[in-house]
Length: 130
Length: 305
Image 1: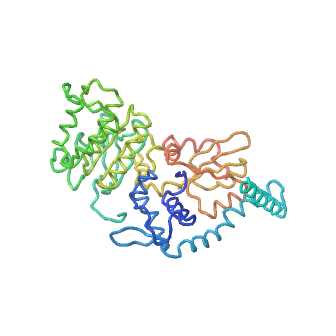
Image 2 (image 1 turned 60 degrees about the vertical axis):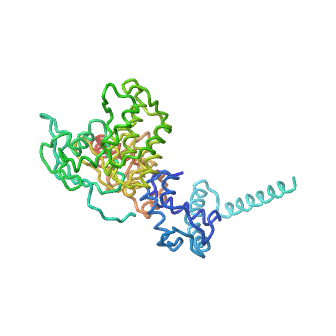
């Protein structure tokens, strides 16, 4: 679950962001405590706290004194916007680099994406009808 | 909870311990902050146990200063009452059964939690009625782990606590340590060479090599502080020229070089040059820094710049 070579608090923050984006944790609901994160991910509580604090600084989580951490209203939309901006750098660019290495032109890449996407929808239809 | 500024639990200045002509601890200075889990890491014979013996008043320093909770520890009841030192090979009275060890522990540790100890006995499946000198090596280690955890001493040392413990029992130890530390923060110094297993538990890392502290750093800063660059030897050497090279391996025309500190922009440059970047674990980093890195760095790449 925890990878090497990347600060753990960053990974914890990203994990919570993912849970917010895919709806596992809804806005205005409470997130687990720092200690619960620490025990679950088997990491130092101070490290877990650092990850949570980062999201507080970003306004994704907010603190209710004496109760715990909650997901801010509008957090999901903001995370999706941020992630969309990162998408080009972290996915499209490496994809084009690898394609260039193999001599696949960008328009061919686009065609491959199209055909993969339509294969997906066909499969989905098949599973629905069967 | 990350920013509580308490007085350091341990302060050491210019500490040296010699045994005859052998210098076990060589002019070492460091602080241990309260309520953090520290890793005291290093190879066998590096001086880890000697440092812990000095801090717990079981050895006298040749020179230098030690302060534990504000005082010199040796023969100081106020300080020693707050310390629990779990040794690799703890000796118990010959007539003791396992249950006697746990029954006598509260005499020494005022924070002793008997319920917690009972739960740990179940977790580790410890045979309470067996003579302590007849239990297996792993069970002996389990006794130490239980005493170390249930004593909740403000300063707890675990010196290679898990000789003979299997992987399941070691994981139980890590899990219980984290859970209990979260509820009852205290200063824990974990000495081990199983670095990969404990690295995520640590907040701060002290690495000792040949009696000297060579790394004294926040665990999170240390993680990701090095990368391995892999690719065509000529490309790799061009990229790492002028950098702090920790290790270099080559096969045919390929090279794999570990360097410290790369910025996001530098990573990008490496990727554009067709080089692969691989993360370096805490264990790999420490192996690189403690395995005679001087010789490795000088071997074949020395003046490729």
